[in-house]
Image (cartoon, rainbow, N blue to C red; front, side, top):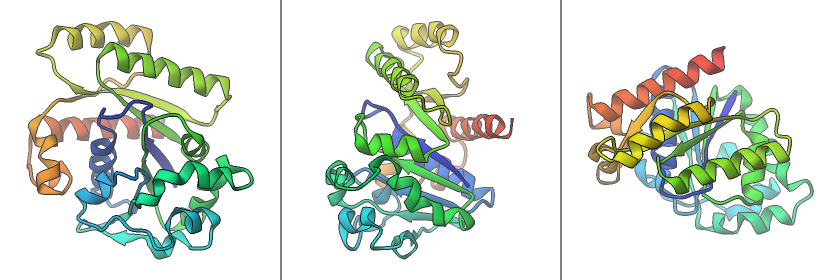
Length: 248
């Protein structure tokens, strides 16, 4: 089982669209896939037309009083399940803080699912918090979408420093450009210059595209309502690149 977290300190950079579309593509390949919506806003849950509600809320979930198995919902797509968000997830930091070894709680909760799923995607809320640290401990890959702006680059630097300072050697950071608009000179300049400075940057770029924004109207992954477009091809290329790095 491989756990991939879509994460960035900054919000509004395309974390949810990344998690939803990649989870769809992986499931389409025939892999048993789970998407866990950890963001109390519940955008991933909304896209799959599932009610954002966890019985018992975050407190019972983190305490281990409810098995994750019983909370998982099927989606309209083969091989793809969803663990929905809950508004109580806004207090996950406080709930985790009340537990022993809080940064290892997610890892412990997910472990029993290793026989059932090939891939688990975590759609994470922004900010560095106790929940983020628990995500870093549980995940194999930190997939970090970055808009080509100076503020987004600053958050990448902060994230790299946090990973280094906390010696998270088992966590592979895979940043990539998201919502890139090549009509903007600043986007073009940043993408050109940062590839040299950050060799870990993936080469695939997810464009700013109206069909990605339509996911909110269609309430499904972009591949569910667009047969072929710049964005569908970009997500397929992104997954191929990630898959090759995982295999390598």
